[in-house]
Length: 182
Image 1 (spheres, rainbow, N blue to C red):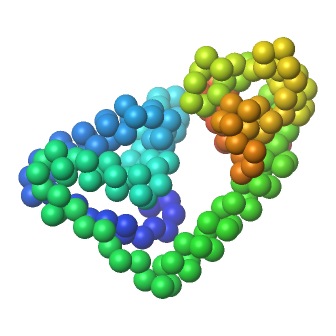
Image 2 (cartoon, one colour):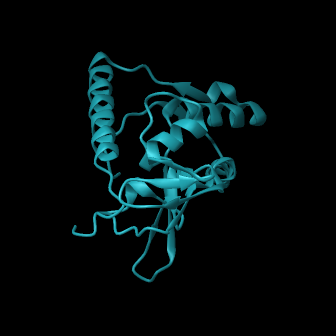
């Protein structure tokens, strides 16, 4: 495991475990292909990992629906979170929010090696395209935006948006591009 974790729920399956696991992975991939962790191996081949960018409640919901279809809902059990786990989770959320704000506030196309003229796309809809204008700005439908400004416009939200998390270049989320001097 790359990070610490806690058991949110257990789903006891007596048979066909590998088939069920594969079906769950395929289902999540069909819902949103970008939820699965993927990395390029040294050979250049794309390696699919068994980690998904899915919050615990939504992951539980997927398992619940599968359990209902299989007729074994009683085998899916949410675990009780201890007080210490609750406190640790709150600290982790706070740290994650602060890190995302720092990354979003400090994003620079130039620092990431992304040149003006590069075409980026909205992470949920590749038909929503923008062009990088300079170090901080993009052009979308003839208007100039920051990444965060355009993400807010597309999502219809006024706050809590980190623009670099909502756009991709060559299939990769902008936030995940390393600085070229790293």
